[in-house]
Image (cartoon, rainbow, N blue to C red):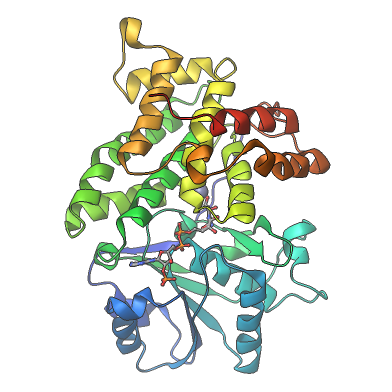
Length: 387
Ligand code: NZQ
Ligand code: ZN
């Protein structure tokens, strides 16, 4: 096991009575900015519940944070923070609102000329306005981690950044808030959480059996609960287990002491930046191709995963069968797993390969994924699904 430090200060408030108790987490004099997305919280009653819970506080609002939050929009929220001397932000939404809020929190106190530099210049973020979260879409784990992914409309770029000062102070996980999710967002969330685990687990053996079993337990839970929660959207227990699986998939625990991959995410971010494909869906389209392309260096873990997670054995326990099982799981959720199903062609992905070439990135746990390997992965992802 590699040496590591593990720190996660996020207070999780889990359950269907926690919104009403948010006030107990706040300072009575706080000037609070509620941040949210395009309006789902107003349709499903979450907005009213939160307004009631904050009735004794000074509250400001910034709505309209879009999926894959845009720098251009978030900078308008920074103005609202500065104008109203906001000293706490409450993010209400999925990964996009939470990530957007992390950026707003950091950009509001940034002393340089352009906060976009936080994303592209590896600047260490040392100050941020404190913030809390009410999660409405289980998927990204952003509610319990300190990272964020921000896009820029003008340049069609999508970059991540993070800092220990960007952990939420608390996160409310109320499974009832997810009952109104459209099925494709639930499916995206299952795929995203699944791939988060795989990025930290599907590498090479590193004498880390406890981390392996944490990962396998989350994968098995998602395989068990995912399809059921899609069919029964108002089943509290299924949503609760789905929600907690997503949070646990990316809160720092699984990556302790192991070497991680993250190439699927890096390629997926470009597919979102260029073609607007939902984050979880990009991962489902890249991952089967990536596993196929890298099945040799990942062979030992593919076999362990096939045996422990999918219960394959004997002659059935082949890398091909394991990869097919994984792809078919995503398809069973209603997600496309091939880029041609989005109408993409070889020439469409060429600019992505070019970006990786220019950046000179070497991705993956073995740093063996350069732009040529990215090209080979995308070529496979463009092939039609086996009939
Ligand atoms: O905007 P509203 O109207 O609220 O609608 C949203 C949005 O259109 C809707 N929604 C959310 N909760 C709902 C709901 N609709 C009905 N009922 C509810 N309860 O869902 C749509 C998608 O929301 P979004 O927040 O974009 O989805 P997700 O949580 O999948 O977040 C995706 C973003 O997170 C980033 C992605 O790159 C992407 O930008 N990620 C963040 C990570 C992190 N911070 O650790 C890691 C991930 O790998 C990921 O990259
Ligand atoms: Zn993700």
